[in-house]
Image (cartoon, rainbow, N blue to C red):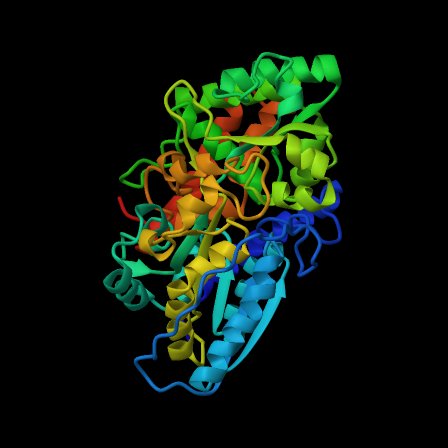
Length: 480
Protein backbone atom coordinates (compact mmCIF):
# COMPACT_ATOMS: atom_id res chain seq x y z
CA UNK A 1 0.00 0.00 0.00
CA UNK A 2 1.31 3.46 -0.97
CA UNK A 3 2.31 5.97 1.69
CA UNK A 4 -0.79 8.06 2.34
CA UNK A 5 0.75 10.53 4.78
CA UNK A 6 0.24 13.36 2.28
CA UNK A 7 -3.43 12.42 2.01
CA UNK A 8 -3.90 12.37 5.77
CA UNK A 9 -2.35 15.84 5.93
CA UNK A 10 -4.72 17.12 3.26
CA UNK A 11 -7.77 15.46 4.78
CA UNK A 12 -6.87 16.89 8.19
CA UNK A 13 -6.64 20.38 6.70
CA UNK A 14 -10.03 19.94 5.05
CA UNK A 15 -11.61 18.77 8.31
CA UNK A 16 -10.07 21.66 10.24
CA UNK A 17 -11.43 24.11 7.69
CA UNK A 18 -14.87 22.56 7.87
CA UNK A 19 -14.85 22.75 11.69
CA UNK A 20 -13.85 26.40 11.50
CA UNK A 21 -16.58 27.24 9.00
CA UNK A 22 -19.21 25.45 11.03
CA UNK A 23 -18.15 27.30 14.17
CA UNK A 24 -18.26 30.61 12.29
CA UNK A 25 -21.69 29.88 10.89
CA UNK A 26 -20.45 30.24 7.33
CA UNK A 27 -21.06 26.71 6.11
CA UNK A 28 -24.58 25.78 5.07
CA UNK A 29 -25.89 22.24 5.15
CA UNK A 30 -24.74 21.70 1.60
CA UNK A 31 -21.62 23.82 1.83
CA UNK A 32 -18.01 23.42 0.86
CA UNK A 33 -15.40 21.04 2.18
CA UNK A 34 -12.57 21.52 -0.22
CA UNK A 35 -13.99 23.39 -3.18
CA UNK A 36 -17.07 25.04 -4.60
CA UNK A 37 -20.82 24.74 -4.42
CA UNK A 38 -23.19 24.12 -7.30
CA UNK A 39 -24.56 26.73 -9.66
CA UNK A 40 -28.22 27.30 -10.59
CA UNK A 41 -29.82 24.52 -12.56
CA UNK A 42 -27.24 21.93 -11.51
CA UNK A 43 -28.23 18.49 -10.36
CA UNK A 44 -29.82 17.20 -13.54
CA UNK A 45 -32.90 19.45 -13.42
CA UNK A 46 -34.20 20.50 -16.84
CA UNK A 47 -34.58 24.03 -15.52
CA UNK A 48 -32.13 26.62 -16.78
CA UNK A 49 -31.58 25.26 -20.28
CA UNK A 50 -32.03 27.13 -23.52
CA UNK A 51 -33.33 25.37 -26.62
CA UNK A 52 -31.06 24.84 -29.61
CA UNK A 53 -32.36 25.91 -33.01
CA UNK A 54 -29.96 23.90 -35.11
CA UNK A 55 -29.00 20.25 -35.16
CA UNK A 56 -26.37 18.70 -32.93
CA UNK A 57 -23.18 17.43 -34.59
CA UNK A 58 -22.97 13.82 -35.71
CA UNK A 59 -21.09 11.50 -33.37
CA UNK A 60 -18.39 9.05 -34.40
CA UNK A 61 -16.92 5.83 -33.06
CA UNK A 62 -13.39 4.42 -33.26
CA UNK A 63 -12.86 0.78 -32.38
CA UNK A 64 -10.82 0.51 -29.15
CA UNK A 65 -7.25 -0.72 -29.46
CA UNK A 66 -7.88 -3.46 -26.87
CA UNK A 67 -10.67 -5.83 -25.88
CA UNK A 68 -12.80 -4.39 -23.12
CA UNK A 69 -15.16 -5.93 -20.57
CA UNK A 70 -16.34 -5.63 -16.98
CA UNK A 71 -17.71 -2.60 -15.16
CA UNK A 72 -16.73 1.04 -15.52
CA UNK A 73 -17.77 3.28 -12.64
CA UNK A 74 -17.72 7.02 -13.35
CA UNK A 75 -18.08 9.90 -10.89
CA UNK A 76 -18.54 13.44 -12.16
CA UNK A 77 -20.03 16.74 -11.14
CA UNK A 78 -23.57 17.76 -12.02
CA UNK A 79 -22.95 20.09 -14.94
CA UNK A 80 -23.85 23.74 -14.54
CA UNK A 81 -25.78 23.44 -17.83
CA UNK A 82 -28.08 20.43 -17.18
CA UNK A 83 -28.56 19.71 -20.89
CA UNK A 84 -25.00 18.39 -20.92
CA UNK A 85 -25.78 15.60 -18.45
CA UNK A 86 -28.94 14.71 -20.32
CA UNK A 87 -26.68 14.07 -23.30
CA UNK A 88 -23.69 12.57 -21.48
CA UNK A 89 -25.35 9.71 -19.59
CA UNK A 90 -26.88 7.93 -22.62
CA UNK A 91 -23.77 8.79 -24.65
CA UNK A 92 -21.42 6.89 -22.33
CA UNK A 93 -23.85 3.99 -21.84
CA UNK A 94 -24.27 3.55 -25.59
CA UNK A 95 -20.50 3.41 -25.91
CA UNK A 96 -20.37 0.83 -23.13
CA UNK A 97 -22.99 -1.35 -24.84
CA UNK A 98 -21.03 -1.19 -28.06
CA UNK A 99 -17.69 -2.23 -26.53
CA UNK A 100 -19.01 -4.71 -23.96
CA UNK A 101 -18.59 -2.62 -20.78
CA UNK A 102 -21.28 -2.06 -18.14
CA UNK A 103 -21.11 1.67 -17.36
CA UNK A 104 -22.60 3.37 -14.31
CA UNK A 105 -22.53 7.14 -13.85
CA UNK A 106 -22.87 8.99 -10.54
CA UNK A 107 -23.41 12.77 -10.58
CA UNK A 108 -22.82 14.74 -7.39
CA UNK A 109 -22.59 18.37 -6.37
CA UNK A 110 -19.13 19.45 -7.52
CA UNK A 111 -18.26 20.67 -4.01
CA UNK A 112 -18.41 17.07 -2.79
CA UNK A 113 -15.97 15.60 -5.30
CA UNK A 114 -12.57 16.42 -3.69
CA UNK A 115 -13.72 14.91 -0.39
CA UNK A 116 -15.12 11.88 -2.22
CA UNK A 117 -11.80 11.40 -4.00
CA UNK A 118 -9.89 11.59 -0.71
CA UNK A 119 -12.26 9.11 0.93
CA UNK A 120 -12.03 6.63 -1.95
CA UNK A 121 -8.24 6.87 -2.05
CA UNK A 122 -8.14 6.25 1.70
CA UNK A 123 -10.39 3.21 1.27
CA UNK A 124 -8.52 1.96 -1.80
CA UNK A 125 -11.72 1.46 -3.78
CA UNK A 126 -14.41 3.40 -5.58
CA UNK A 127 -14.84 4.86 -9.04
CA UNK A 128 -12.59 4.00 -11.97
CA UNK A 129 -12.88 7.43 -13.57
CA UNK A 130 -13.55 10.80 -11.91
CA UNK A 131 -14.09 14.24 -13.39
CA UNK A 132 -13.70 17.54 -11.58
CA UNK A 133 -13.84 21.19 -12.61
CA UNK A 134 -10.48 22.37 -11.24
CA UNK A 135 -7.00 20.98 -10.98
CA UNK A 136 -6.59 17.76 -9.01
CA UNK A 137 -2.82 17.98 -8.84
CA UNK A 138 -2.84 17.51 -5.06
CA UNK A 139 -3.89 13.87 -5.66
CA UNK A 140 -0.92 13.10 -7.94
CA UNK A 141 0.58 10.42 -5.64
CA UNK A 142 -2.56 8.29 -5.86
CA UNK A 143 -3.60 8.44 -9.51
CA UNK A 144 -2.42 6.78 -12.70
CA UNK A 145 -0.21 8.59 -15.17
CA UNK A 146 -2.42 9.50 -18.15
CA UNK A 147 0.46 10.45 -20.43
CA UNK A 148 -0.45 7.59 -22.74
CA UNK A 149 -3.97 8.95 -23.23
CA UNK A 150 -2.72 12.49 -23.81
CA UNK A 151 -0.03 11.28 -26.24
CA UNK A 152 -2.63 9.32 -28.20
CA UNK A 153 -4.92 12.35 -28.31
CA UNK A 154 -2.03 14.51 -29.56
CA UNK A 155 -1.34 11.91 -32.22
CA UNK A 156 -4.94 11.92 -33.40
CA UNK A 157 -5.88 15.59 -33.14
CA UNK A 158 -2.71 17.70 -32.98
CA UNK A 159 -1.15 19.38 -29.98
CA UNK A 160 -3.12 19.96 -26.79
CA UNK A 161 -3.42 23.66 -25.95
CA UNK A 162 -0.87 24.83 -23.34
CA UNK A 163 -3.63 25.97 -20.97
CA UNK A 164 -4.86 22.38 -20.64
CA UNK A 165 -1.39 20.84 -20.47
CA UNK A 166 -0.32 23.14 -17.63
CA UNK A 167 -3.47 22.11 -15.76
CA UNK A 168 -2.89 18.36 -16.05
CA UNK A 169 0.85 17.67 -16.19
CA UNK A 170 3.51 18.12 -13.53
CA UNK A 171 6.77 19.19 -15.23
CA UNK A 172 8.77 18.27 -12.10
CA UNK A 173 7.81 14.61 -12.45
CA UNK A 174 6.64 14.44 -16.07
CA UNK A 175 3.45 12.78 -14.87
CA UNK A 176 0.03 13.58 -16.29
CA UNK A 177 -1.92 13.38 -13.06
CA UNK A 178 -5.06 14.16 -15.05
CA UNK A 179 -6.41 14.20 -18.58
CA UNK A 180 -7.79 17.57 -19.70
CA UNK A 181 -9.86 17.46 -22.91
CA UNK A 182 -11.71 20.75 -22.34
CA UNK A 183 -11.99 24.02 -20.46
CA UNK A 184 -14.35 26.96 -19.89
CA UNK A 185 -13.63 30.72 -20.18
CA UNK A 186 -14.36 33.11 -17.29
CA UNK A 187 -15.61 36.45 -18.68
CA UNK A 188 -17.26 39.31 -16.84
CA UNK A 189 -21.07 39.40 -16.96
CA UNK A 190 -22.65 42.87 -16.69
CA UNK A 191 -26.12 44.44 -16.85
CA UNK A 192 -26.12 46.84 -19.78
CA UNK A 193 -29.08 48.88 -18.47
CA UNK A 194 -27.07 49.68 -15.33
CA UNK A 195 -23.70 50.39 -16.92
CA UNK A 196 -24.91 52.49 -19.84
CA UNK A 197 -26.23 55.38 -17.70
CA UNK A 198 -22.88 55.67 -15.88
CA UNK A 199 -20.94 56.02 -19.12
CA UNK A 200 -19.97 52.43 -19.89
CA UNK A 201 -22.47 51.10 -22.48
CA UNK A 202 -20.05 48.32 -23.40
CA UNK A 203 -19.25 47.47 -19.80
CA UNK A 204 -15.95 48.04 -17.97
CA UNK A 205 -12.70 47.20 -19.74
CA UNK A 206 -10.32 47.86 -16.84
CA UNK A 207 -10.34 47.26 -13.09
CA UNK A 208 -10.36 51.03 -12.57
CA UNK A 209 -13.49 51.32 -14.73
CA UNK A 210 -15.07 48.50 -12.74
CA UNK A 211 -14.50 50.48 -9.55
CA UNK A 212 -15.66 53.77 -11.04
CA UNK A 213 -18.81 52.46 -12.68
CA UNK A 214 -19.65 49.95 -9.97
CA UNK A 215 -19.42 52.59 -7.25
CA UNK A 216 -21.68 54.98 -9.16
CA UNK A 217 -24.25 52.24 -9.78
CA UNK A 218 -24.29 51.27 -6.11
CA UNK A 219 -24.64 54.91 -5.02
CA UNK A 220 -27.29 55.90 -7.57
CA UNK A 221 -29.24 52.64 -7.93
CA UNK A 222 -28.43 50.67 -4.79
CA UNK A 223 -27.23 47.70 -6.87
CA UNK A 224 -24.00 46.03 -5.79
CA UNK A 225 -21.41 43.96 -7.65
CA UNK A 226 -20.66 40.29 -7.07
CA UNK A 227 -16.99 39.37 -6.70
CA UNK A 228 -16.75 36.85 -3.90
CA UNK A 229 -14.10 36.57 -1.19
CA UNK A 230 -15.31 33.26 0.18
CA UNK A 231 -14.38 29.56 0.24
CA UNK A 232 -15.66 28.72 -3.25
CA UNK A 233 -14.42 28.46 -6.81
CA UNK A 234 -15.55 31.82 -8.19
CA UNK A 235 -13.77 33.67 -5.37
CA UNK A 236 -10.63 31.67 -6.15
CA UNK A 237 -10.84 32.71 -9.80
CA UNK A 238 -11.69 36.37 -9.18
CA UNK A 239 -8.81 36.80 -6.75
CA UNK A 240 -6.32 35.34 -9.18
CA UNK A 241 -7.55 37.49 -12.07
CA UNK A 242 -7.04 40.64 -9.99
CA UNK A 243 -3.68 39.43 -8.67
CA UNK A 244 -2.27 38.69 -12.13
CA UNK A 245 -3.65 41.85 -13.72
CA UNK A 246 -1.76 43.88 -11.12
CA UNK A 247 1.45 41.96 -11.87
CA UNK A 248 1.37 39.66 -8.82
CA UNK A 249 1.48 35.87 -8.73
CA UNK A 250 1.57 32.96 -6.29
CA UNK A 251 4.65 31.42 -7.92
CA UNK A 252 7.01 32.25 -10.77
CA UNK A 253 7.84 30.08 -13.77
CA UNK A 254 10.48 28.28 -11.68
CA UNK A 255 7.78 27.33 -9.12
CA UNK A 256 9.23 29.57 -6.42
CA UNK A 257 6.80 31.41 -4.10
CA UNK A 258 6.66 35.11 -5.03
CA UNK A 259 3.29 36.17 -3.60
CA UNK A 260 4.69 38.75 -1.18
CA UNK A 261 5.35 41.60 -3.59
CA UNK A 262 4.39 45.27 -4.04
CA UNK A 263 2.14 44.16 -6.89
CA UNK A 264 0.19 41.75 -4.68
CA UNK A 265 -0.16 44.36 -1.95
CA UNK A 266 -1.47 46.84 -4.54
CA UNK A 267 -4.03 44.26 -5.70
CA UNK A 268 -5.19 43.72 -2.10
CA UNK A 269 -5.46 47.47 -1.55
CA UNK A 270 -7.56 47.77 -4.71
CA UNK A 271 -9.87 44.90 -3.71
CA UNK A 272 -10.43 46.62 -0.36
CA UNK A 273 -11.55 49.81 -2.11
CA UNK A 274 -13.67 47.78 -4.54
CA UNK A 275 -15.44 46.05 -1.65
CA UNK A 276 -15.99 49.25 0.33
CA UNK A 277 -17.47 51.15 -2.60
CA UNK A 278 -19.34 48.48 -4.59
CA UNK A 279 -20.19 45.43 -2.47
CA UNK A 280 -21.66 44.21 0.85
CA UNK A 281 -20.66 41.67 3.50
CA UNK A 282 -22.56 38.93 1.64
CA UNK A 283 -19.51 38.28 -0.52
CA UNK A 284 -17.64 36.82 2.46
CA UNK A 285 -20.04 33.89 2.85
CA UNK A 286 -21.08 33.24 -0.75
CA UNK A 287 -21.08 29.86 -2.42
CA UNK A 288 -20.59 29.37 -6.15
CA UNK A 289 -24.34 29.79 -6.77
CA UNK A 290 -24.59 33.17 -5.09
CA UNK A 291 -23.36 35.47 -7.82
CA UNK A 292 -25.34 33.52 -10.45
CA UNK A 293 -28.52 33.80 -8.42
CA UNK A 294 -27.96 37.49 -7.76
CA UNK A 295 -27.43 38.25 -11.44
CA UNK A 296 -30.50 36.27 -12.50
CA UNK A 297 -32.60 38.03 -9.85
CA UNK A 298 -31.48 41.41 -11.15
CA UNK A 299 -29.68 42.28 -7.91
CA UNK A 300 -26.09 42.50 -9.19
CA UNK A 301 -24.52 44.83 -11.74
CA UNK A 302 -21.44 42.68 -12.53
CA UNK A 303 -20.11 39.22 -11.78
CA UNK A 304 -17.04 37.27 -12.88
CA UNK A 305 -18.36 33.95 -14.13
CA UNK A 306 -18.94 31.65 -17.08
CA UNK A 307 -22.01 31.83 -19.33
CA UNK A 308 -24.00 29.36 -17.19
CA UNK A 309 -25.84 32.09 -15.26
CA UNK A 310 -26.82 33.66 -18.57
CA UNK A 311 -28.07 30.32 -19.94
CA UNK A 312 -30.21 29.86 -16.83
CA UNK A 313 -31.55 33.40 -17.15
CA UNK A 314 -32.60 32.78 -20.76
CA UNK A 315 -35.31 30.48 -19.40
CA UNK A 316 -35.83 31.68 -15.82
CA UNK A 317 -35.70 35.43 -16.48
CA UNK A 318 -35.60 36.32 -20.21
CA UNK A 319 -35.70 40.08 -19.54
CA UNK A 320 -32.56 39.81 -17.41
CA UNK A 321 -30.88 37.56 -20.00
CA UNK A 322 -31.52 40.17 -22.67
CA UNK A 323 -29.81 42.76 -20.47
CA UNK A 324 -26.75 40.60 -19.68
CA UNK A 325 -23.67 41.23 -21.79
CA UNK A 326 -20.05 40.16 -21.42
CA UNK A 327 -16.52 41.55 -21.31
CA UNK A 328 -13.16 39.76 -21.51
CA UNK A 329 -10.60 39.86 -18.70
CA UNK A 330 -10.27 43.33 -17.21
CA UNK A 331 -7.00 45.16 -17.72
CA UNK A 332 -4.95 46.11 -14.68
CA UNK A 333 -1.71 48.07 -14.33
CA UNK A 334 0.28 45.17 -15.83
CA UNK A 335 -1.96 42.95 -17.97
CA UNK A 336 -5.44 41.51 -18.49
CA UNK A 337 -5.81 37.85 -17.48
CA UNK A 338 -8.48 35.54 -16.09
CA UNK A 339 -8.24 31.97 -14.86
CA UNK A 340 -10.12 29.27 -16.70
CA UNK A 341 -13.54 29.05 -15.04
CA UNK A 342 -13.57 25.27 -15.33
CA UNK A 343 -10.82 22.83 -16.27
CA UNK A 344 -12.12 19.40 -17.21
CA UNK A 345 -9.72 17.23 -15.25
CA UNK A 346 -10.36 13.49 -15.46
CA UNK A 347 -8.38 11.21 -13.15
CA UNK A 348 -8.02 7.43 -12.89
CA UNK A 349 -7.23 6.47 -9.27
CA UNK A 350 -4.48 3.93 -8.75
CA UNK A 351 -7.02 1.48 -7.31
CA UNK A 352 -9.17 1.53 -10.48
CA UNK A 353 -10.18 -1.98 -11.55
CA UNK A 354 -10.93 -1.08 -15.17
CA UNK A 355 -8.33 1.47 -16.21
CA UNK A 356 -8.33 0.18 -19.80
CA UNK A 357 -12.02 0.99 -20.25
CA UNK A 358 -11.55 4.35 -18.55
CA UNK A 359 -8.78 5.36 -20.95
CA UNK A 360 -10.63 4.15 -24.04
CA UNK A 361 -13.75 6.04 -23.03
CA UNK A 362 -11.74 9.23 -22.54
CA UNK A 363 -10.57 9.00 -26.14
CA UNK A 364 -14.12 8.35 -27.37
CA UNK A 365 -15.43 11.30 -25.36
CA UNK A 366 -12.67 13.54 -26.74
CA UNK A 367 -13.34 12.41 -30.29
CA UNK A 368 -16.91 13.65 -29.84
CA UNK A 369 -16.13 16.84 -27.99
CA UNK A 370 -18.15 18.83 -30.53
CA UNK A 371 -21.21 17.14 -29.02
CA UNK A 372 -20.06 18.07 -25.52
CA UNK A 373 -19.69 21.68 -26.63
CA UNK A 374 -23.09 21.74 -28.30
CA UNK A 375 -25.02 20.00 -25.55
CA UNK A 376 -23.38 22.19 -22.90
CA UNK A 377 -24.79 25.12 -24.90
CA UNK A 378 -21.29 26.38 -25.80
CA UNK A 379 -20.07 26.18 -22.20
CA UNK A 380 -17.42 23.49 -22.87
CA UNK A 381 -14.44 24.52 -25.04
CA UNK A 382 -12.03 21.94 -26.53
CA UNK A 383 -8.39 21.41 -25.59
CA UNK A 384 -7.74 20.29 -29.18
CA UNK A 385 -8.86 22.96 -31.65
CA UNK A 386 -9.68 20.71 -34.59
CA UNK A 387 -12.24 18.75 -32.56
CA UNK A 388 -14.84 21.55 -32.69
CA UNK A 389 -14.41 23.36 -36.03
CA UNK A 390 -17.95 24.72 -35.62
CA UNK A 391 -17.12 26.66 -32.44
CA UNK A 392 -16.43 30.09 -33.94
CA UNK A 393 -19.53 29.81 -36.12
CA UNK A 394 -21.70 28.86 -33.14
CA UNK A 395 -20.31 31.76 -31.11
CA UNK A 396 -20.96 34.19 -33.97
CA UNK A 397 -24.53 32.92 -34.40
CA UNK A 398 -25.62 31.33 -31.13
CA UNK A 399 -27.88 28.30 -31.79
CA UNK A 400 -29.36 28.74 -28.30
CA UNK A 401 -31.18 32.00 -28.84
CA UNK A 402 -28.89 34.85 -27.81
CA UNK A 403 -30.12 38.30 -28.77
CA UNK A 404 -28.21 39.66 -30.55
CA UNK A 405 -27.13 36.35 -32.01
CA UNK A 406 -23.42 37.28 -31.85
CA UNK A 407 -23.47 38.14 -28.14
CA UNK A 408 -20.93 35.37 -27.43
CA UNK A 409 -18.67 36.01 -30.43
CA UNK A 410 -16.00 37.63 -28.23
CA UNK A 411 -15.32 34.22 -26.66
CA UNK A 412 -13.60 33.09 -29.87
CA UNK A 413 -10.57 35.03 -28.55
CA UNK A 414 -10.89 33.80 -24.95
CA UNK A 415 -7.58 31.91 -25.01
CA UNK A 416 -5.78 35.23 -25.45
CA UNK A 417 -6.81 36.32 -21.93
CA UNK A 418 -7.18 32.98 -20.13
CA UNK A 419 -4.58 31.02 -18.18
CA UNK A 420 -4.17 28.19 -15.70
CA UNK A 421 -4.43 28.69 -11.93
CA UNK A 422 -0.67 28.26 -11.46
CA UNK A 423 0.25 31.08 -13.86
CA UNK A 424 2.98 31.78 -14.81
CA UNK A 425 4.00 28.29 -13.70
CA UNK A 426 2.08 25.01 -13.89
CA UNK A 427 -0.82 23.82 -11.72
CA UNK A 428 1.48 21.69 -9.59
CA UNK A 429 0.56 19.81 -6.41
CA UNK A 430 1.23 22.84 -4.21
CA UNK A 431 -0.92 25.09 -6.39
CA UNK A 432 -3.68 22.48 -6.14
CA UNK A 433 -3.59 22.63 -2.34
CA UNK A 434 -3.40 26.44 -2.28
CA UNK A 435 -6.51 26.45 -4.46
CA UNK A 436 -8.34 23.82 -2.42
CA UNK A 437 -7.69 25.58 0.89
CA UNK A 438 -8.71 29.05 -0.41
CA UNK A 439 -5.56 30.90 0.61
CA UNK A 440 -6.04 33.65 -1.99
CA UNK A 441 -9.69 34.64 -1.31
CA UNK A 442 -8.93 34.53 2.42
CA UNK A 443 -6.00 36.87 1.84
CA UNK A 444 -8.23 39.43 0.14
CA UNK A 445 -11.06 39.00 2.66
CA UNK A 446 -8.93 39.74 5.74
CA UNK A 447 -7.95 43.13 4.35
CA UNK A 448 -11.40 43.97 2.96
CA UNK A 449 -12.95 43.25 6.36
CA UNK A 450 -10.36 45.40 8.14
CA UNK A 451 -8.92 42.47 10.09
CA UNK A 452 -5.39 43.01 8.75
CA UNK A 453 -3.54 45.58 6.69
CA UNK A 454 -2.76 44.62 3.09
CA UNK A 455 0.87 44.06 4.09
CA UNK A 456 -0.11 41.82 7.01
CA UNK A 457 -2.56 39.68 5.06
CA UNK A 458 -0.12 39.17 2.20
CA UNK A 459 2.55 38.19 4.72
CA UNK A 460 0.24 35.61 6.28
CA UNK A 461 -0.64 34.22 2.86
CA UNK A 462 3.05 33.95 2.03
CA UNK A 463 3.69 31.85 5.16
CA UNK A 464 0.78 29.53 4.38
CA UNK A 465 1.82 29.13 0.74
CA UNK A 466 5.49 28.55 1.56
CA UNK A 467 4.57 25.80 4.01
CA UNK A 468 2.50 24.09 1.34
CA UNK A 469 5.23 24.42 -1.30
CA UNK A 470 7.95 23.20 1.09
CA UNK A 471 5.91 20.11 1.95
CA UNK A 472 5.34 19.09 -1.66
CA UNK A 473 8.84 20.08 -2.81
CA UNK A 474 10.34 17.82 -0.12
CA UNK A 475 8.47 14.95 -1.75
CA UNK A 476 9.84 15.76 -5.20
CA UNK A 477 6.48 16.92 -6.55
CA UNK A 478 7.25 20.60 -7.05
CA UNK A 479 10.06 21.91 -9.25
CA UNK A 480 12.56 24.63 -8.50
